[in-house]
Amino acid sequence: MDDSDLKWNLEFRPKLAETATVALTTFLQGIGNDPLPCKIRTAVDTPDDVFDTYGRLVGNISVQAGRGEQDVNNWIVGQGWAFPSFYSSMSEQEITTIVGLADQAYQKGLGVWPYLNDHIHAADFDLNLLYRGNGVVPKPAVDEGRVVLPKLFRRLAAYVVNRKAKMVSGTFETYLRSKRSSDAVHLTGEFLSQGAVAAPLHFLDEFVQGGLTTVWPEELVFREKPSSVIGAGGGPVSF
Image (tube, rainbow, N blue to C red; front, top):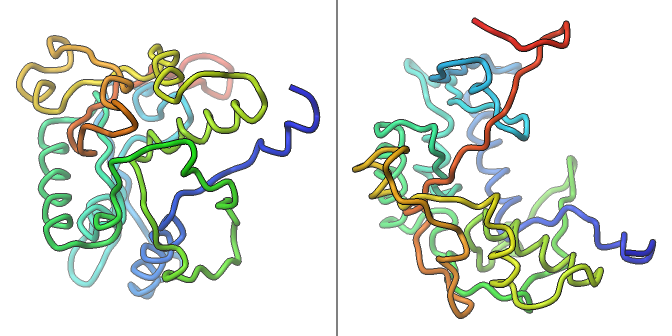
């Protein structure tokens, strides 16, 4: 890679990402508190389970809405502004709750569901759709367009950029197969019936064939990558 290729090292966004963000912001602002108190709940065995390998909190955020609490995670899915994305650390109840909310949003045609696209081709990737940061006022009508599974969108973005930089060759499906070490998954039905230990292991590339995605978002459970939480003294944190 030379310096000219670095121009493609950008933060890309899918269609409807800005619209979904505005929908969540509008909902939270409508509650009327600023700052907005919240509760974060996470079910873990050790501190290392609280954050994933990318430093993201694994848990649910709840806010006080009216006389009761509203789980923000569930609200986003129930309004159709997020596709289900499951991980092997989640419980059966968490997964089935999200599946139920997602199914209702799909049946009502809410949010992103009418735009879910089975086709995934590098030629369709829009290099002009970039993360624009704070202060941008999205126009929902302009933001509409076909969307693919978020995991696949991120893999497609990496593939397109690496191909531009001449770091990879071959098809997108070939690229996915080369990333198997980080894309281990279970089928949700097998995961729920057999558990994380016994459920057969699959890989994300198995579900992209001939440029088509062969599963729905809620049909996959991704294997959680291990992480370590380090305390102020540089050592591991314990309860």
